[in-house]
Length: 372
Image (cartoon, rainbow, N blue to C red; front, side, top):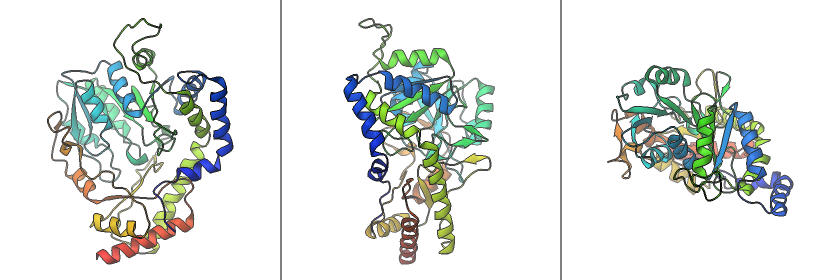
């Protein structure tokens, strides 16, 4: 049987009554923008992540941009981030008028390498955005120490990692601010776009609330030029239901990762490099990303066998046409380049079964044998 990369229908069927009830309550109430569901979700996510404030916005990308604006990052400033990631963080930096500065990654975890970030700092550097990629936390202690030394804002990108821990502490609670994404495929996903800014700073939270609603707290009175970036009630109601299951789902993802590793070992697939987990960290496997030579041919063989996969990401950010003239890179980022050539994400979602995992690994073995 085919195995999808993610199965949102299976998740919905397992909690259909809860979800349908939450949606019906919103419909019955007739309030669809910035109402009681959003307010409740903000309180609940802040409590879960261990921050004082959480502010719901329209997407994870908007959360990045509005957090940067709230901290006054803008034209002439530089912001350090990872060369190997989705474009959202760099896109947000460019959107506020600043320059993204790319650094290489750690080979084990795909996360920004703090040692590389040291060489990226100039007099224009104002912030650093560590991306907790694929569900694995960045090594936050050296990043925070570097930021303190140079008085830099730390904005954590937790879009793929809500619930992950580093030395017992949840991601999103380390930096000056953090963002989460509720994109449907995320570990905590809505049924549309949505995002949130987390912070312990009251001024930052107040500013994001202002910016997300056209710069207004009093109707038709606008203190600043903001934008329309409001999390709607329907999505907030859905995410509130899902938040109750998040730890259980993340635990299931960790069990599946262990099952993958055991099955790959049993098949003696020594040329497959498994995702790493740094000591003291708790990976939540938003994606289960292996490395393999001849990746494209292996992926084609898996797809032909009905196994859905994903390449995240096939190129590094400094090579994206939209960023070439708007960013700079500290080096040629060899570790990130190697990752872009080798990474392949296998099916991963809480409802995945042991039979499906074994099927995926068997087809992976077949694909590797055919590719030589």
